[in-house]
Amino acid sequence: MFKTYIPLFILSLTGIVACRQTGDGPSGATPDAPLFTRLPSSLTGIDFRNDLIYDRDFNIYRYRNFYNGGGVGIGDINNDGLQDVFFSSNMGENRLYLNKGDWKFEDITQKAGVQGKGSWSTGVAMADINGDGWLDIYVCNSGNARSDEKSASSFSRVNELFVNNGDGTFTERATEFGLADRGLTTHTAFFDYDHDGDLDAYILNNSFRPIGSFDLRKNLRYTRDSLGGHKLLRNDNGHFTDVSQQAGILGSII
Image 1: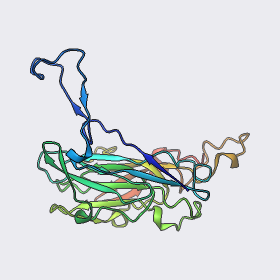
Image 2: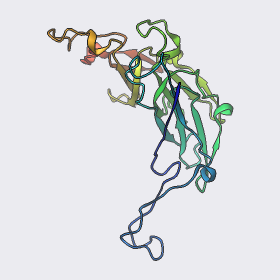
Image 3: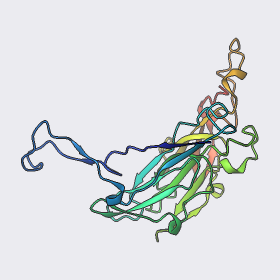
Image 4: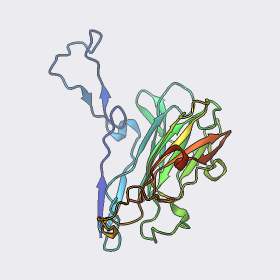
């Protein structure tokens, strides 16, 4: 068994501070001075690590996205003017750090209730999905790759929506909002595609089928995959409706 550590390098977060090349910069600064300074976790309080356990049964040969890594979401979850940080984990619990100012962060994962259910989490999106003035957290999951990836009933990979309660806690409500997608999701973007004043969602999914299973002589680009294909979801008064086909989103099986 091999344990692999995937380091995360995040600008202006765990250990890198941006400096400005202007007249009001640090006294004595020169053009050759470093632009960034690395801050250790002992100073910032951010000690997240995305640890991977590589063994005979679970590795890149069995799961092609094994080394793709997780995601990072940055946003002000408590409206105090400071940017907070959410890390997704592939084989552990997700982590949420509250910005206390002066590059100090507090791990509030358990208190906030956003650790997740142990899925293979990937992309993270922070957006005010219900329009109440508080940032919510949407976590994309690719599920437990040890299980049958073709099974739509693999609940471990259902995406999660953590709705901000405005008091430092969150409630998981993906099913209620119609956002509990079961594909192998890489990332999701929220934007108002129909200009009606609310946020819609575009979900980026991976195919369940291995590349070697395709007959390359066939044109499969326009063969839609209802589970593994990309999706466009329209926000209809707080519930998301799949409008991929009518909007012309391919959602290819490839």
